[in-house]
Image (cartoon, rainbow, N blue to C red; front, side, top):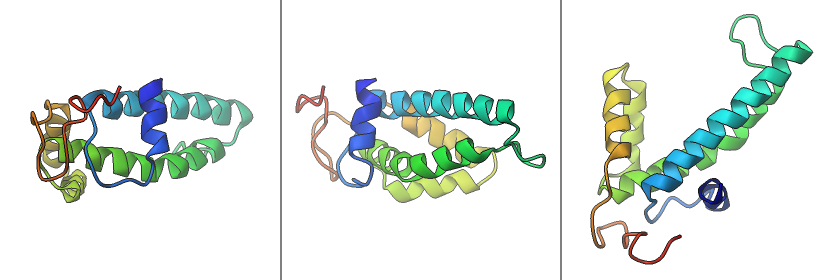
Length: 124
């Protein structure tokens, strides 16, 4: 849970690097929270018939939008890539698969152009 709160506390920080743990735990808890809110939306009848997104789910999506982009940017920095590579998500299938692969890679040892390795500076 500490990784989730670390990512939230750095919600608009697009510089530096993030560990895989920070990124993937943030994604996990975001999915769990949005799933739980979807269940509440569905139980209350607040879901849209055309998309399935309800009031609470939509609000959570807006709340998590900026932190998601920033933690993914920092994660890409960890492997030496620019955060702009997230735009690959708009390329059907192949772009998303490439992004998932990159986000799962271990970060470069030592410092790179985006800063020191968070594992080496005692970031948890």
